[in-house]
Image (cartoon, rainbow, N blue to C red; front, side):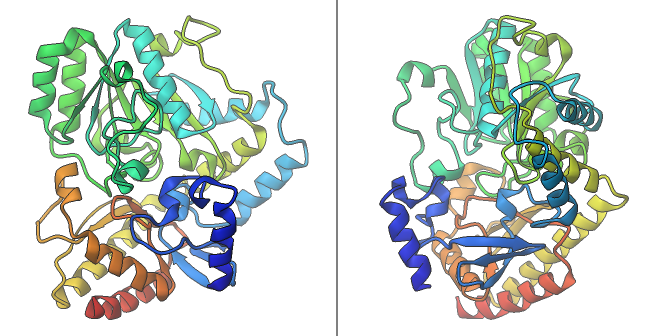
Amino acid sequence: MDHINNLFQQAQNYIPGGVNSPVRAFKSVGGDPIFFTHGKGPYLYDVNDRPYVDYVCSWGPLIVGHAHPEVIDSVQRAAEQGLGFGAPTPIEVTMAETLCRLVPSMDLVRMVSSGTEATMSAIRLARGFTKRDKILKFEGCYHGHGDSLLVKAGSGALTLGVPTSGGIPAVIAEQTIVLPYNDLETVQKAFRQFGNDIAAVIVEPVAGNMNCILPSLGFLAGLRKVCDDYDSVLIFDEVMTGFRVALGGAQSLYNITPDLTTLGKIVGGGLPVAAFGGKKEIMEMIAPLGPVYQAGTLSGNPVAMAAGLATLKLIQAPDFYKNLTNQTQKLVQGLLTRAEAAGIHMTANQVGGMFGLFFTDQKEVTNYHQATHCNSDRFKSFFHEMLKEGIYFAPSAFEASFVSSAHGDKEIEATHLIAEKVFSRI
């Protein structure tokens, strides 16, 4: 542990806050972050070579576990040919064909390097297509750190207790309408007032940045209808949910077709890859076909494409999602049962390989307000006690957790046994 503490002190001398993404700093839970050196299957190993059962999975991408041999082999073979060319490659065409096949709402797709880049580009495209300025988003949903979207955001901004970010001009923030998640009535009211000025609605179809919040019955269908009524673009931000909750993403699970979709995390297999795509008539507005500019030197990088394609191949195996869902349900139900037995008030949300735990006496958590009124002190205690026992959950009460196909009965049973001890202590 001293080695870890020394590393964090060293990191703070050269990196703001000692981390390259704010939530990693443990500000929400206290203490110093763990520095990891390698992972294998469902395990992460710290600088002292201590193993942890990992339910962060690099914040979602590692759906087949750490260092899967087929993914590593694909990356190594691609790297032997060169790390990048800044020019078209056959493998990026294969990736585009694969994404358009697996996500039928995407007629055309553009590869980028981060989820933020994907959502930022989708917003610009929606504005260019509709010739409107306003964007409607939902409280507690995080869509990356683009200026138009970092307004009452979740994820790291919520973790730090900062509802907005410095450095964003008021004139930009004024173009973003922020409404409660799962409240269709307020959406309809906003459209009656501003509908002819709203370029797009952007939504996490399953929110993962105020912990895991599922859409209420009819919410997504209602967004589809109001966007149709006012000729606005419906954007599903599936950076997190794409290939995580179902093979075709949340849109296939809930049978809703968005106009644009953003993808990330799993499409890179652990490397920095994202994408945005959708209806042909909208996507053809992008340069070089249209007037909406978007570019990226590393977009479609062949090594990253190799990692993503290898992962996408693995998740198409028969019963992959059935088994992943079953394991996740087994984990969550076991935790709930043990919490109840210990007199701990806790509820949970789960879909596919994604889940969230909430320390609250509420029967369900469906929005930002409820999520932020859960017992954060109890979560902190739970997090640290589990960490001491070698179980790694996200260091924030406002982040979803994940299970990979590498998490077997052994890891889940161990988590249950440890949680039983921890619940009795907290």
